[in-house]
Amino acid sequence: MASTKLRTQAEKSPLEERFDTTRALTEALAAPLSESDATIQSMEDASPAKWHLAHTTWFWETFLLRDHVPGYRLHDERWPFLFNSYYEAEGERIGRFSRGMLSRPSVDEVLGWRAHVTASMGDLLGDPALAPLIELGVAHEQQHQELLLTDIKHALFQNPLGVAMFDASQPEAQARERGWTHHPGGIAAVGHEGEGFAFDCEGPRHRVLLEPFALADSLVTNSEWDTFIADGGYENAALWLSDGWAWVQDNRIGAPLYWRDGDHGSEHFTLAGWQPRDPNAPVTHISYYEADAFASWAGHRLPTEFEWEAVARGQHADGAPAHDPAAGNQLDEAGPVQPSGSAGLFGDCWQFTRSAYLPYPRFQPAAGAVGEYNGKFMSGQFVLKGASCATARGHSRPSYRNFFYPHQRWQFTGLRLAKDI
Image (cartoon, rainbow, N blue to C red):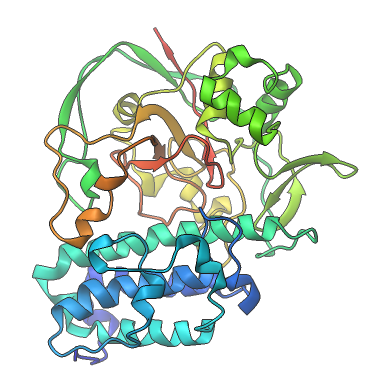
């Protein structure tokens, strides 16, 4: 078994501290939820909060404890079938659409498992040979922190009572006159530079040719989207990709997800329940189809991922105003509510690009089961850049490549315009 020796804060390495902080934050984010809240699953794309708590524990137990601690015994040999996500190399697993049927194990049992696994990591956290895998595990759990929040938001939205997860208010966003950052084009180096952690899909670093362009220095706002709707944006087929227009018609789409207009005025559903819709705040929870249609209506276009990254070089995600605790969007047990519309490229919404999620030149997935992490999803999805109000601090960087299918919009997805010059 791994050592369970308690180490003082002074004895812990930065990686150990990140591990401890990440494990604690996941539990803090789920703390406001009841057993029923944590068990429900609103759609196949989303997972129950309890499942996120368990799956992130399965990851550590499987790829670290089981594989690197001689004699380690699984906490419960039945649970890998329940909490494996998509790793074919790890064998059979419950169907994704059935995760919400797992009334057992209980949340308390899962939390007990989490405590056992966290304590069992012991000396593995100080093994330099395992540091890359531990870094991956921390980043993996941070991704699931954001998914936990966006998935429970979608689940609570189904409740006619308009229930809230957090009791939090959001400061009003300031109106901003849109400016543009001009880029002369030329040959640009993109992709991860090799210092610090990055997912395999962020590299290898390579060269691309950019034509002159400009990137908007602010996100599209709710008020701009209201104007798009009033001008018949959802009714004009000429603005839409063919697949997007079919999606609008088939699903009767007429506004971003979580919007409503009624007796209480213009509102949107947040993690703090139904709230007035701030006209100056960034629009969010839109699909790629909607983002592309709006850009066409506005006479502009979506940026490529390489254009976005070329402008972002030199900006640091950790220092983004939207990730400042004073801005009211700190990701902690108080919970995020909604993008605030701050300056900078990071921290409000994930921003759609027009780039397909495909491998970079010379890309090779990692060996073993962890090689299934990103590479096998490089089909039919689009790259998003930046970070959202629900993204763990320190989790994003200019080279980061988030990705979703063009119809998906339950994440904090928004829009930044680009234009040719």
